[in-house]
Image (tube, rainbow, N blue to C red; front, side, top):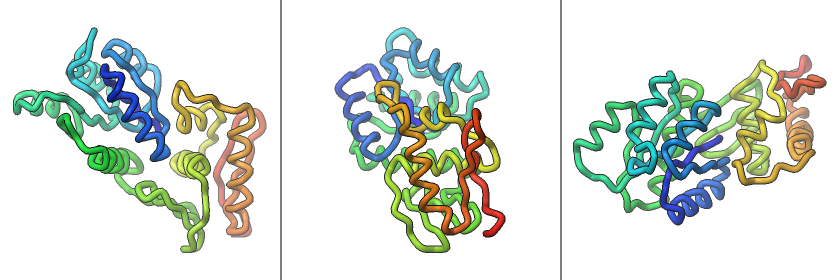
Length: 224
């Protein structure tokens, strides 16, 4: 899952980035409203954490432009402003939740999980594909009801493939969901994660097929 943090306080932005990456999210940061607006017009995110007091464009304008483009990405407004009018204005413009500074990281992470869960798969937190089930909130996968051990990156690849089940997903799309802008992606990293997943899933009849030159397709084995 990919998150955009829009925050002009570098210390806070760095702390949020570290915390969310430790929770296995891919995280990008923008430090002003104009940069955020540009990025949001070009890339997909599963969640935006948005400060209101931003340079160049304030958070209200970033949110207004986002919704005018028809984007439904969940937005958590994060701000020092605690006036009722500001909270109402943010929600009226399309924010999904509101958290006032200072805040506790566990609370923010819980709200992040809830918003992402609400935004994907019609609000369902458990994805299923044959004998395979993935709890996106609890970050756990099972085969035939039995837990399987997956690394954070393997879980990330699996989640993208399951969300797009029946459609081909290329390496670039997988990398975008797994890594932030400033994280280096090894040339063969995605292939390694897919190979490991195959070994763990195929005994239960769940196959990840390589479509040469295009990407990967999650499909059920005809023997399942």
